[in-house]
Length: 238
Length: 103
Image: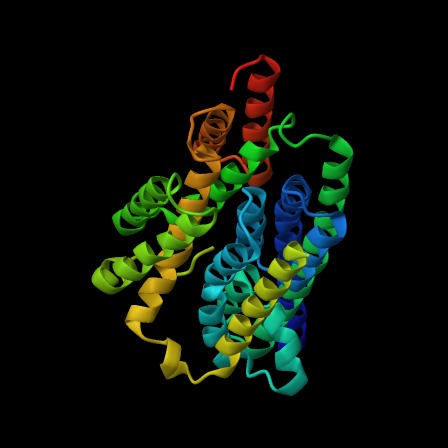
């Protein structure tokens, strides 16, 4: 008897969480929109990036490399490498959601940090985890893209990005994305080694290449230092 | 044109990665080594992107208003400020220094 009202309560809770997560990511979307335009993308290109790529770290990486004068290949490679974690989210989600056919093709675009975290948080109830995934994914998709448009239009209206300090906002955004991952010695060492290698290569390598070289640090530490990286309590990048 | 190419390639690659996770057998990706690399990869790339965007100038490295801006952003992070405040602190600091003729 109590199953129905209990599910309704559960349902409301999941939906409320989904909308809150969507609003919170909207703040990232605003800065992405402004930074995209500052990097030299048009408003249309900036919005297309949010609709089509739809995974924040990759989008910031793409415009970051393009802003520095990098060409299409290193920019898109950096973006795709940053998107690899979504494959691992998808792996966890495939057993939980069991999406088939067209639903899987649509759902795939919504596999991001937030929707995965919410689905996993509600993993113990079949209906709740499906609702958590779809509601969070759609809320973030809607608000992220709206915020990108608003940010891009505002950035365009504001004038020279350097006068506004937007060239400092881009690396600060990367530091903010990195910050919650620096939970142990292994990730802090990866951070220091990757930053040092990239800076050493800046004077001698084409734009974009120093960033890609940092992926080798990840590869090396992933192989040599596997247990230290896996031994941390939160294996999920947020 | 090159920008659209970059967007298109990145979008296709990112989508295929998401779809692959939902589609491939678990055993392919669910290996400790693959998992460890996937934890280290975003950390390494974000660190390199942050460092390069803070210090790189055409042909070399420099400490200028951007470094001061990022330092202000880091202080905001230490104070547990939200993302938008961190980014704004960096921008305002760098813009302010430039308005004063520094960096």
